[in-house]
Length: 95
Length: 493
View (cartoon, rainbow over the protein chains, first blue to last red):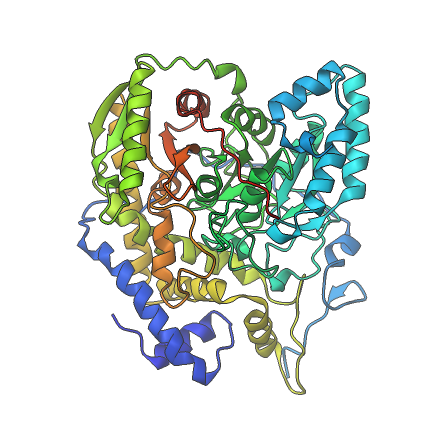
């Protein structure tokens, strides 16, 4: 499977990382090197093998669905690049 | 006073308890050593005021006669750990200025035990790298030097390894997703432990690949690793994958007696192009364990060759998902926007500016292998191969093998800039011996075992059964005693 410029641009878009037009050929080449390396996996017969879900056999712990920590909006917002009136501020999302 | 920073954790603990030294003395010696080691670029943030305050509190506890083993011990903390009120950036521009409002469980446990934080340590951005060259702080440098080249301390915990090897601290925290504790430990002649997956809480550690990440100690001896690991691990309700198992006294298990233990030697780790010196070191290690009374057995781990490619599907996939949180909204860097830019432009510009080349590469590879149409062919397929890799280990442990001995790395430390960025796969090959251990969730330790003919340290890796870090460390202790590695880098920095 080889990655062309169109696919490289699509992946960058999906990853929400801006890649300039002129950087796409180098990016596609890197993807192809890495995917060539990953393609070795195709040799492995995985018929009837279950994909790993958890590396150690464990049942995730459960707890009551209640608020355990909260009421600290100033702390939650303290690292925000832009926060106003108790909210995270972002550019307009809807027209 | 700088020689105090050369102490092991065990020696410092004993001296503290006898009243021969104070934690403030130890801390000031380490702070001075770290201050004078700018050329290594290991510490990227010094926290001297906090350190001295913690040291004073530790001295009071020791005087009161209530002193856990780590009480008063000055440590360096990898920048991947969130430390309350102290910038924690995972060596990334995208977390520029991020000062967490909370403390990671591992550092909290260390502080509760009385440990002192000297500052934050350099690393590869988001723990992605094997050379510490991918860091917003610039590269960390190996204190070992044999000619005029500056060598890599390995990665991703390169700053941790350099700081411990150069005696800037008594021990350091590291994290290991594919070898990021064990490879730098081997490159700098120190001990590094990756515990069983679930042993240390991941809460408050910036996530890279959540099913593989584990924190662990990087120290000057196996005994120190046992002491420090004991203080780092234990169940944490904040990490649902943290194991609810008792933590044994790892140090008490260091008897050095390994008579009758079965050590497996996997034929698949004899990779093409491996330097003869690594082969010799491995053979020497086998003889040392035999001489200590262990039974050595040839074993096969048939899927070893597929571990690295499986890792380079699974780890980027998890990273692309974990790193989706860096969007310029809640913390860290946000790009300057132009008139008319909407929220998508904000995401795209912020992430393009904030992530370095290797992180972008991995996030995009991860995005690709998870995208519609490729999920089964890549991601699910790799997870099936991961099942087979784990089964290989289970089979040899069921057959009675107690631990597996392998080289830690396929080479000694290389020069900074020597492995080209053009071919990322070349760099990935550094982790060929360490990655299978993460995929199988097992504990592993790198023990310094000798010097190559250039005079650079080489490490051997021991891999243990899940949850049996105590037994594994005891085997490592026997290997350490037999190898008798005492060399230190000559000070040039």
